[in-house]
Length: 229
Image (cartoon, rainbow, N blue to C red):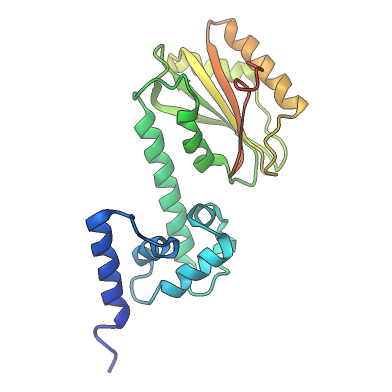
């Protein structure tokens, strides 16, 4: 007869109780991953798969950033769990965006950095996004658009489209962001030319571009901090 109370069920219960008592304080990295895996794998011990994920990807963000096919190579993970992990990641990104909407001034673009690094920093294709802000530099509701999605090394962005979308939304200011899939965040000459074109287009309708950020999973380049805006 199958064991009606396998040993891992007590371990899962203890993990949940620790979390409810003190959040993730005191959790080892693999235990945080274990806790997540219990949501997607209800009927088996997830300690070893959690440790295997940490061994392969290094830490939680590396796991959440990993492509589906890489996650599926880890023993004990299966086909459903990678999708669940990507849902968790997407939900976290949406939470960060909604937390910023209408909140404190975003004149300091550092407040959006964590959101964009989670949202686009690890993508394998280059994408270009715009955050639309009001006159108080607060993010508008649903205030981030992905305007273009390109290949591994470029995304075609049209200044006219950026300006038209900003006007439709009633924005007063913009923050631009795109990713470099190769991990190097230094701007190319094409990036600099595009930024100048976008600034000129925005100025014609009295829109202010606060920053253009280039992100990777681990780094960010700010045109504003570099003195290019």
